[in-house]
Image 1 (spheres, helix red, strand yellow):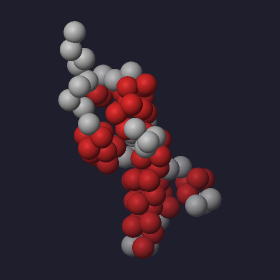
Image 2 (image 1 turned 30 degrees about the vertical axis):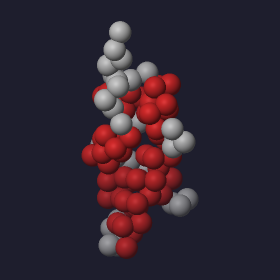
Image 3 (image 1 turned 90 degrees about the vertical axis):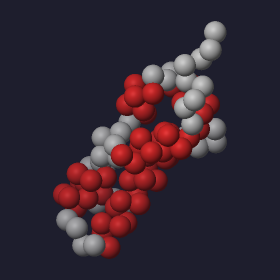
Image 4 (image 1 turned 135 degrees about the vertical axis):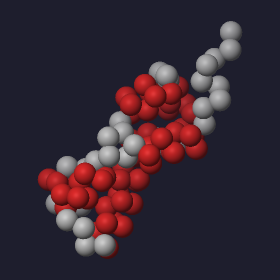
Length: 88
């Protein structure tokens, strides 16, 4: 029996994270690719999905802070709460 997630790779998962960064979660990745959580971790290898999401969100925060965007706009774009943004 062929596994339906054989063709899914890390690049596709990264692309999905970037495209859906404001609302992405480990569950939404699994739902989108029809993957059990353990398969998602297997595909990503050493990288944890939560870390990938956080890294992408931090890139947005850094870029938007350089552009002097408000915390509210950064929050909407990155998916980080305003209270969390105040800590980083």
